[in-house]
Length: 168
Image 1 (cartoon, helix red, strand yellow):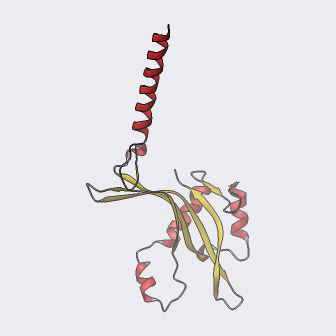
Image 2: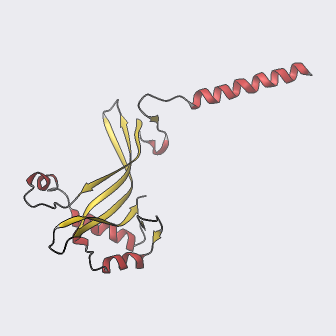
Image 3: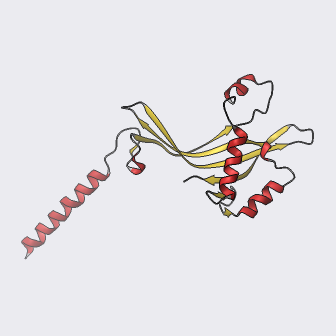
């Protein structure tokens, strides 16, 4: 009886070692990705960064040039339309609670808000890099809309978070 018990323990140990060994295999520089059939390695799993989409300084020609191909108003309108048409869900930046369409309408009615003031976005993304093809793929998980917060003199004081939209 002891012989069979010993063989079971050895077999169990070999199986566990096999699973642990295979689970720990990774390519250097990131984890091997298998989800969504995106080739390459994951080099940033949920990276968060801001992007200015409205030039706060008309004399800043470099920023003006960088934004010259952006359809800012169209993109902002499309995000609002997606929320209003229940194609996307909006969330509060502060408590991450889902916002209703009436919540979004209330934001739009605020005295300091207008879609024209949406000047900054914040992206939550996953980045993948395929070193064989030299292709970088970015998957956007969410986009936050932030609008200009101005002084009484109309100078930019900063940005206020309106809400974020989760992408499919």
